[in-house]
Length: 367
Image (cartoon, rainbow, N blue to C red; front, side):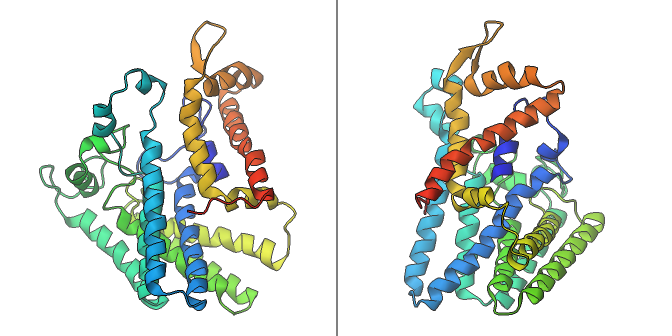
């Protein structure tokens, strides 16, 4: 979550290190790992939460209602966050445009949808079957994207705006309701939800390993083995079948990111659970225990801070976010890239004392 806030709030998008940017289309950067890692660990948490509730004797209808209510609320919050107008939009606001250009897909929307589907699948099937479902979803997405012609466009393609995923979003949602930087495709579109569900299931399978009664050495071995296997398969598939692409959430992207998530989690498991090295973990625990809250706050404040306008040294008015960067961080560092990174790091760090108060008082946003 800390890294997500950083990459979403660069001091100056013209001067951003490549590691803090998404790949423009095909490829992979550290920033591209943030969202799939979150979906992966969400899948793991589904196993922990629902297996406990089932063991406690909670009825299946009650669990289904809780899952659908929680997931739907996350989706609605995501749509609402996208709909909050910035200062320029407020000046020209009218209700007609508000609904005409409302974006339907998004990060929280994908989280909510994947949570609902993965949770319901877990209630219905055992983990062995879920493994085959994940594989089937990845294969199905590849076959659809690789071989199905795009109506009105041409042969199957992995290119931006001319692929089956983009076409389906435009037909079912309408261009006005897609990612506002393009209006031709959406990085959280409909068809790419299929492999995103695969990410959640692979995370759930890791959750099963972590919650099992086997020893810590065996848990570490299985996570390292699975991570290495996913990563190797993903790289081979990237070379021979389809590119790794976060915008399409391609099947190769799922395998590579799930592999890296397993390997990184293995490292944390070894340090924290096996070696009991916890002296450095508290800030991350504070962020993690209120992850949805801090995401909502950061997304809301990005827009809200644009309402506060301050004149700079040239007499031009800027939102307070950009005014602080331009007036303090930009002159402070000789490198524009470092200045932009320093401000985004500082901005993310500003949420730590807020979350610390919530953590100290045991206030957790539970949707």
